Amino acid sequence: MRNKDKRDNRSDLDSNIDSVVKYADPTQGLDPQQQSRRDFLEGSGAAVVAGAGISALGISTAQAQSSNSAARTAISVTVNGIQHSLEVADHWTLAELLRDELDLTGTKIGCNRSECGACTVLMDGQPIYSCSQLAVWANGAIIQTVEGLAVNGELSPVQEAFVVNNGPQCGFCTPGQLMTATALLNNNPSPTADEVKDAMVGNLCRCSNYNSIVEAVVMAGEEGGVA
Image (cartoon, rainbow, N blue to C red; front, top):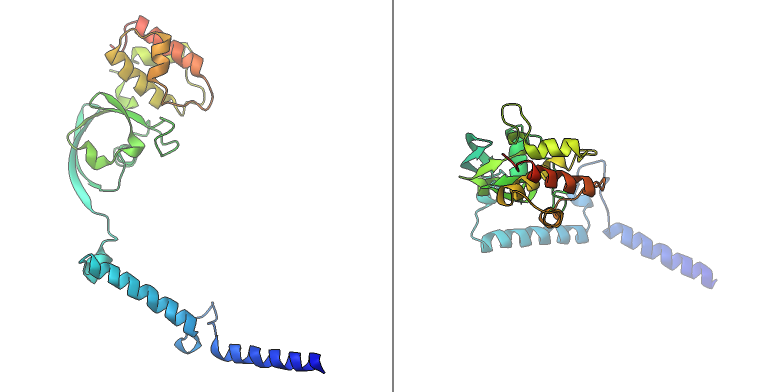
């Protein structure tokens, strides 16, 4: 008898819950009459918070809606001796500008978070990770990529040394390695092996071909640096 009462009471409770909490069929549009009180409060609360945030920032609704469109900025940048004047989205990285807009795909995107060095290019002579450099920051700068190392079809000394010493393995990190090595040789034409290791510590080689890379850079210095 007690069990029957318990079942009857639970049945009454379930029926009361069902009469209040009703969820819309997920395959259909939301019917306001089927929306539960909890759903309504959650939805309206989120709207109030969002509206309050926009108002507190002094942003109109129209401005908030239009903020989804990316802002663009006109820049002028010289890449491998060629000047480019173009508009870039403010969120573009330099790597995206080089690869997607200028079609200089020698610059590789590896980790995309300033750790592997595959995207290294020279900006005003200094090696930088182009995946973490905004394109707008390059306005007025001089950029050199791996495509700019060879002159009139002739490989640079560091490129030739990489070939002789079997520096590339899979080749993915090679452009970044070459650019860092070029920056080093520009400042230190005859580096020692230890100096090469120190300078290139930010360039990772997943094939672990470090000995050959170091030997290549040392050889390039011995045979005339980057000239």
